[in-house]
Image (cartoon, rainbow, N blue to C red; front, side, top):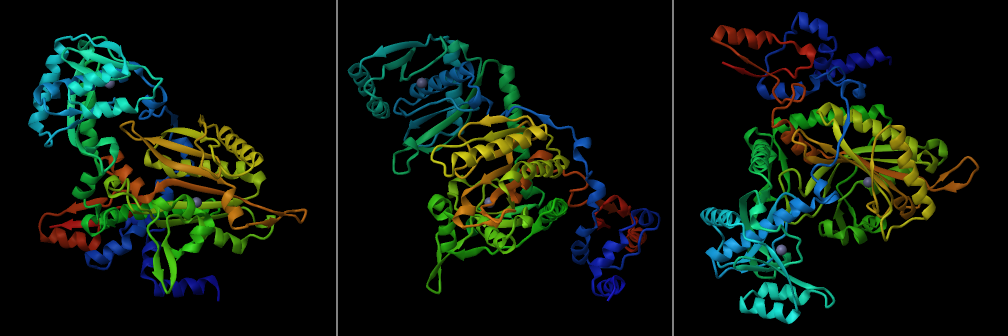
Length: 594
Ligand SMILES: [Zn+2]
Ligand SMILES: [Zn+2]
């Protein structure tokens, strides 16, 4: 049977194929819109997502169209280069907060009050939650304390003096902290007006140096974060040297609030989380699913072109598999409990890797078979505490854009280089043109020989240098089984998101005794490379919603064209003829409104 016969059979059997072939010549369809049979809306939605033409939408050489910028990791800048003065200012503001609360609510006991990345908080033991009205009063009192320009004075005390001081004030939590301070350490307190705090400092010289302060919220917390400890009320705030900086920050907070993917995802009908029916599990609604499908199709096409083979793997397997891979030992806290099936324990998969190893075994015998690149949009399940779940960004079931490359040790740099290129092809079209790249090196307690670590780390460096990608070294931040490259991308607000990760692994091929025969007939262990470009489809989608503020570009938009008609004759005409330019990649008329 020739190709023509197959084509005929396929064409007669498959309606969708007809849809594709109609759009294969965009110029023609632009001149004379194809007559579409009348279908109901559902039928239309099923056929249409195939019709976007990704090759015309997405340039094949992204680097020409999307200039890449390498920036600092703006969110983590304070942790990488601690800004002592801003931190000191915010920590001083936390003391002012405690002073204000003690003045207004003398029965409140103080806990701890550190500066944070974007502000400060203070914990109080109090018999009820603080209300928004309370926060207003407290903030006004703080402003009065700042205006009074109280000097902040450091005092060194003996252990006994400090003990007497805080027991006379009835500050049990401070006494507990005092008892935990090592013998040899100096005990210092800071006074400002009628308030004294046990503190190492440093602080501003007077409260007047706090330019602008704002209380943001309050929530419950546990003493030392342990649930069996007394519950506390935590008040969050932020402070800046000037009012202008505070205003800019608050404006940014409001912008972030408006872009929140949980809010937009609901308003725009993209997704729901199961919540009481299963927290951390996602329902993709048709409009969100349509965007996801475009992303996944692009992903598959790109991976095909880069020589990946697509595979499918099951969602559960015998627990033994996870014991052999080592996940049960190292990763148990993030795995769901095993379930019993016919007397054996089965486990929901937290990772796709062991399955891909089993598949690679089938196809790797000789060095001639390498590299093997296996790709899968693989759904995994991980146990996350319910309190840490967050929209699509932190969920319990998600789809990794996963792939594993099995190669010879001498090919690591070449393979990583290809992955780096694929990262650009995947992420630049979404507008992620700013990024920070980190190379994480050998951590404490890692497995593998010095020689392998050296080889892999040098290969990663070589690949980054060859690709002309500037990077920073993250010393000791590699995975226990090998070094890795992490890429953080900056969204329109300058927030950074860890998306792509490329990890070299010596460990799993060993655990599964994977070998290939080299040119001299010797059995050699291949190197395994784990890599995800988007991270997970759920998280990536959540980030995209915030990045685009829900207004997806035309090629991604769930509804590209809506034709509004006036009067029934025009409606019928539009319904019959669908006068739209399909050739430019439109997904078709999504709604005809009468
Ligand atoms: Zn302090
Ligand atoms: Zn993996």
